[in-house]
Image (tube, rainbow over all chains, first blue to last red; front, side, top):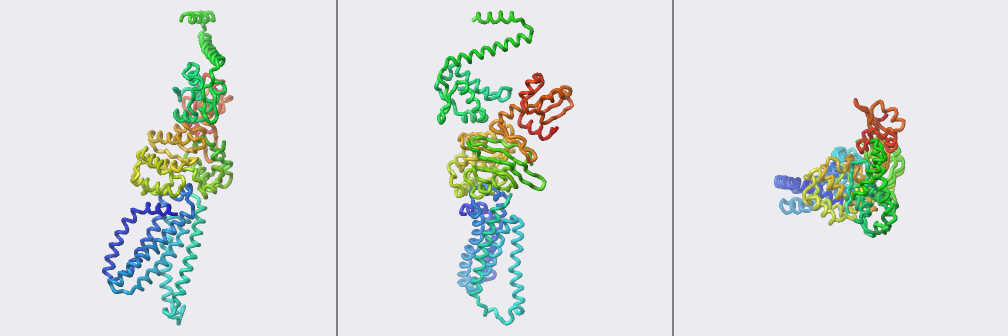
Length: 213
Length: 124
Length: 286
């Protein structure tokens, strides 16, 4: 698995360097303009998603998967490395940048840290869901169509939140936002996310193992 | 040791190799007990198939010119003068056969052939 | 002596193409040349051997395993060069070596570096900047540097100049010095195969036409050229497998050259090259 992550690093290295500089500059400008650092982690997690999608495109362009069949690399390693790339990108990069922006927000702009934390967690969960569901999809239908599918998938949570928000009273008339058992909701979400990760991973491995070229 | 192969020409390559090794043995260039190159090394150097070199060596062994020791390689067989004489005789007869054929095709009389042979045998 | 690869009755159906009853072996210690026109089924056969494509029927054994086992446990002992499928072009040879070191137990860094040095391949340049010849060399040395026992190559030297091809032939011949090593080489460069192949397997429209030793093949097949008038008499003896009529003569490919030459010593009967054999089979089917 480490070998596969190394391969992805080598493949995307130059892409990294170009994109990240641009993003940091953009971000600094926005942060100063809006006096708010909370979306630092959001931007970085979006960046992580771009890397994730590019990894599939890069493999497709060099017909890597067909070649990998002839090497001792196991399907679990290939798929696992891709999943790790996603999760480390979102949660690793995301939490580090969330921490930085929380400190920044509190020290520089006097904004509450909870806002940043909330934003980070919400976005990280959504991105994880989208990314991990896309994993078997990418292996099933290929990199290009996978990209489109993933982009469409992004819209789902967005629309869902807006719809639930507008229908709140009809659906849950009487129950207020604050009175919800948030810790329980968070726990359930995390549990669902973990289960989803495992199921997607196993499904993706199965698809990859039996794929023909 | 030199082995020079023609890729064009009708004579099979294994035959050419066989002939040249035989010649070397008959002429004394290769002596009893001398090691021959491995069939794979020979194939690689001459850029031919291993099956070809293998066949050449197998036939040489069958005709008694070389011996193959498993794990060690092939060596020129102990000098068997009987064998060598037979081989030399065979070649001489082949050459004479060619001469006779030419004579027949061109209508030269047997008597003339004999005279020519006598002259050649005497004049050395 | 074992067979490195054994194929019995391989069948695979695609929409407008099928492999039918493909049967041949790659003996240990041998170089098997796999020939056929484009689209004849060489790549499909190779993919089926490696487990990249799933066969519809038949048995394949590669180093004693089935293709599914081969793909799953992927034996370290098989080195593969296909015309598509390799690392992404932004990788440098040094990067490839680092990744391969983690993929193969037997990856030999020293050997890889030595090959790169020998063939003037820069270790620190992304290989997208390489010439075509250098790219192919890189793929071949990558396949060799994990000490495989079996090399499978699908048209590795197409489009290369003769000098580079000669270097590659040397590599293959070096590889085969160990008599437990074997090579399956599919190629259009029939002159190379005429030199180094031990066996030739000819596939045409999804079927194996013949599988025989190269020496036998070059001895048995010949191109006979004669006049139209001489033809009927000759055809009684000749095993004609293909025919080409020109304005000036008739040319037929025969598979029993020795008999024909004995029966008709004055008729022109020249050794057939692999190219001749392929073209006559493909075109002159009468």
